[in-house]
Each structure stands twice: as C-alpha cells, then as structure tokens.
Image (cartoon, rainbow, N blue to C red):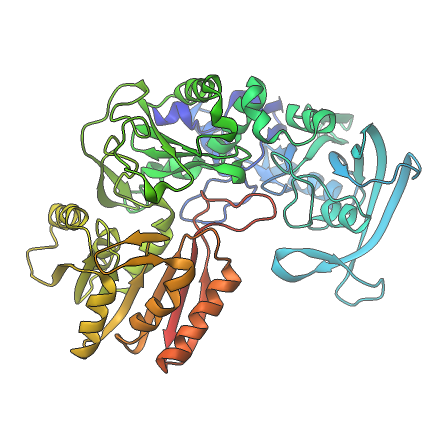
Length: 572
C-alpha cells in the first residue's frame, strides 16, 4: 500500500486562495492548528509547510489565528515576513471579520431572528470555559452576533460573527444560552457525526493592495445533513456520501499514526485503530490497521449488520481506502462464549484484496510485535494498550515486573526493552504464551534468562507467589472481562476486587500496580472504587492513584467514556 496516498501530506482541495502575500485554506475537521506532541507534529501548519516545500515553494507561513481541532473552516496565513505586522494589527485590532456556521438544538423558536450574546468567560474545569459574573477578575468579555439561517424542528442552523476571540467562545456562549452546538461533547451538544461548527468566511484588508478581500469555505455536507435529518445513527451505512464522509474524517484523524514513519524509527507505529465505533460516528464498527492491511470488526449480528447488503457496502468502502486487503471479524454479543475460530465469524482469508502472510510483523513506536490476521477473532495484540505499553517501557528500567494475564507478552516485551531487571509472564493459555515466547525471542531478549513464562491460573500463581514472599516492583493486571479456566469462572464485574487484592499482596514497597479493565459495564468511577476497596482489603496504602487516558485513536462516543479503564497505583 501507499501510505502517502491514504494519508497525503496535504490535499490540494483544501487551498481556498493563494497569492504572493496570503494563503487561505479550508482546515478540515480533526486536524489541530498547533501540534499537541512536538515529537509528532501533525498540525495543519506543519503539514502545509511540508506541502509547499515538496512543491519547491517557500514554506514560510505567518500564523495569526487558530481554530479548534474539531472546528473546520477558513484560516489565513502570511506568505511574507514583512506583512506580519499589518496582519497582526488587523487580527488584534478586531478588524478581521470572522463568521461561523453552527448547528444547534434548543434555540428558542420565539427568539428574534438576530441577537447578540454578551457574556464574561473564564477557564473552568476539565478544559472547558465557563460563564462567570461580569466583574470576575479572571473573566474576559465575549461578544457574538447570532442570526438564524434555517430551522428543522428543534434543529437550527445559526450564523455567528465573533466580535471577540475567546477560547471556545461560540461553544460556551451557545451552551449557556440553552442551545449547545451539536456534537460538542464538552458542552452537552446533541449527538452528531462531528462538532457542527464551521468557520465559513473571513474578511480583511489585503496587506498590499489595501482592498477588502473575503475568503470562504463551503459549509460541509454533514452540517446540512444534520439540520435536515438529525443524527443518522445506523442510517449512516445507507447514505453513501455520509459513509464516505465519516470514513474520511476518521482517516484524517489518524494522520499522525498513518504517517508515523515521518517522525523517526522510535515513533514508527504500523498498528492502530482507524475507526472506533461511535467515537467516529460509525456505530458497531471498528477498523484496525495492521501494516498494509485492515481488519473490520462488526459488533453484533443484528442491528446494522442484519442486512447483508450493508456489510458488503461497508467492506467495499473500506477496500477503496487503499490498503492491500480487508479482513473481517464478526463479534457476537457474547463473543467469549463462542468458538473464535468459526470461519463464518472470522474468515481466514481477506474478504477484499490480497492475503497477508500467515504472520506479519508490526511496529509499535519502534517495538516489533507479531500478529496473525486470519487466525480467528483475535490477532494476538490489543491495540488499546499501546500507550500503556509505552508507559511500562519507561517505568520498567531496573525493576522486577510481573505481567499477569500476559497473553502474547506484549507488555513483557515492552518491559524487557525498557531494561527490566527481570520479568515473569503468567497466563493460563499454553498457545498464547508460546506466541509470547516467540515475540521475546525474535526481539533478542530471551537469551539472558531474566524472563520467565509460567502457564498457570493467575489466582493460583498469585497465592503461591505470596506464600513464597515474592515481590515485584511493577505488576501489570489486565484480565479479560470474562474467562473460564480449570479453577473456575472469572467475571471482571464481580471478581476484579479479589484479583486486585491478591496482586497488591505481591507488590514491593513503593511498587506500582498498572490495573486495567475493558469491561464496558465498569465505569471509571466504579473501577477506582474497586481498587480503593482492594487497597483496604490488602492493608496497603496508595500514595497516588492516577487515571490513564486511552490512546487518541480510541475516542469515546457522545456522552460516554472509553471502554478501556486504566489506573496506575503507587503504594507506600
């Protein structure tokens, strides 16, 4: 596959205007204006500079405005240094006219067609802005002119002119007015395929000619679609344009991962999530990248997937993205109770494109791991633990590590490559541990004898380790939500507390427990409660319990939280 085709540096169609002095673009949804990770610069400015350089143009850009990552629309840059003073004066002096289009629910039908919102805003909790009293010393005035463009039932499209330029200005003011922007997770917006906010027009004086100039970016189709039809939900699979749009937005949001080879061998990552269900406005669909192939996972055999034509339509669109092949996994509601090797659920060969080798090597920030795409419902790697494996690699230096429910030992390999003094990997599956041994051997870390693999029920092993007074500096606890062994049945919702109590018993003083669960019925709040109770039951005290965020390629759906909950517990 050609990764530059799937994830081009910049798309020609994003350029709205270009001359010797100014360059205007239509920034897409999901692309930041400023790099969040300086070691992985995926922001629109860096990409545009690279695009210009690749075409032999001067890559200089003077930056005078920003848009939130999830806001699309017009941005203007200076192409010469000597006009920066003029542009800065126009932006800072509020002489640049910026208009937006927003789709909201709850805008009162009896309100005047045009109105002005005047509020005082200040930073609030959790990255949000909030409305504060006018005399608040930390507040700043926010003024937004609002005009109604269209109405369909409770849904309204508004034109906004921001007279001031405060962080999240339109979002917090409209939410305070009782009409949050659709798709706005921070401020309680109605469900939508994206944040329904678009910067559609920007007007200023041209710095050389001194004539007024206006740059426009067309209102995206998804805003018009939401106004007319509301949130499509499963219906996205019956609308070819909506489906292509949702897939395109998901692909764009993964640009930094898709182009990770640009950021050096230590950052190269060739396995990650491309589509994460409702987090990418595609219900019950997850798509994972493994090198040059993708794996489509359909959750449940009912709902959107009861219609075979829908399945084929989605597979066709995935095939058109440009990967070498598409594998299919159909995950029943009780996937733990079925044979994951049933070919009707997990065909051993791709349903589109060419087959991958029986086993392929992927990279995770430079760490080699081995997966099998046609070997049942599982590939041998849980992609949602990528960030946690990076953390383990950093924490493990000189430490003794126990990896419980180790599966194919990806955490163990991360610890070994991070310089762990020793590791023990415990799992009840002989075949999983054999694949783990292969992962360690191929990476060249088995020869020194510091890494032990144990086939055992984890509860049994923990009891024996505690009896032998074995202690570990770092214990990794990542059990399945449900499992059955010779010892009995494990259900995370019922048994995680007892498991954590046993794990804490083998933790060394000042040791760390990385506790994880992907059980969708356990909330983050409940998970912390389970761990606090386990600390009390074990007689240990924590100096810190730190919630760990999921990787950016696993966004939560509207109003929800990610299914993977991870807490790093440090004990006295």
